[in-house]
Image (cartoon, rainbow, N blue to C red; front, side, top):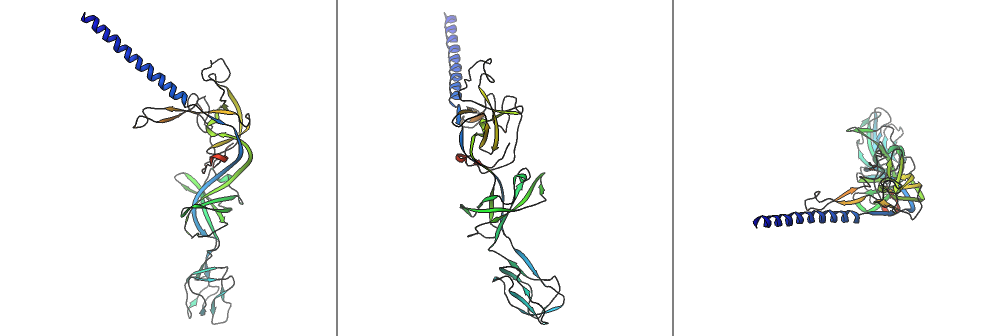
Length: 339
């Protein structure tokens, strides 16, 4: 009798374990399938930015030098922190030789001589800074510097004024870079258009507009996958449960596409899709072991990973493009350019 009781209990335990396993597997499948995401092909403006950080500096900040040797100073006509105009006399000499004049408008920040002293050619007599004409010099990564051109428009954010935006234009690009830890950056000078409230030394973050296109078709960048030398998307009408013998890879309907501009958020589709079509995005799979509270999200593509700039899970090769930042989703704006 006891033998039958143990057998019955064993059957119940095995059945309960089997039920819990099947139930958890079914729930997991429902959770994964519920995370299937799609995106619609949109049309709008694509803008690509390259970014760099730096500081505000004056366009003009220079030492004023004595023109000749052994001249005795008759009079110093200005004092420190005094504003001067271009051509204004600053220092006169007892022998009647030509006075030292201001080379441009600005503020005399220091005076290094006094009346009665003698000066030699090339000696610093004063320093002039023009605080009405400011610029910022930012460091741009070597991968992005080929995209930067003189004359490109720039939006500048100032750390001291996070709610304000300033504008400017690229005015100069360094011919030589600086290497740190194997990474080279190049100085790019940006002439600021408006300088209200700005002070020399303030930190800046500049976004240089390197490419812009109206009426571009675009999709989220993770919707585009690479395989060999080609790119493709998965159409939202695809049935993930189709047989391998049907069209596409693993039964999914792949659409070959050609791409144009790209940034951190979006990629332009130049061929293969039409506005309003729907494409699949990589699934969000729930992983119960990734966080301490038992819940976490893990990006998974169609068969493992997705997107132009990572392995697609279809044997695709990694593709890369220049660095970026500053993505603005709704209008397809951000900072990376791609091909």
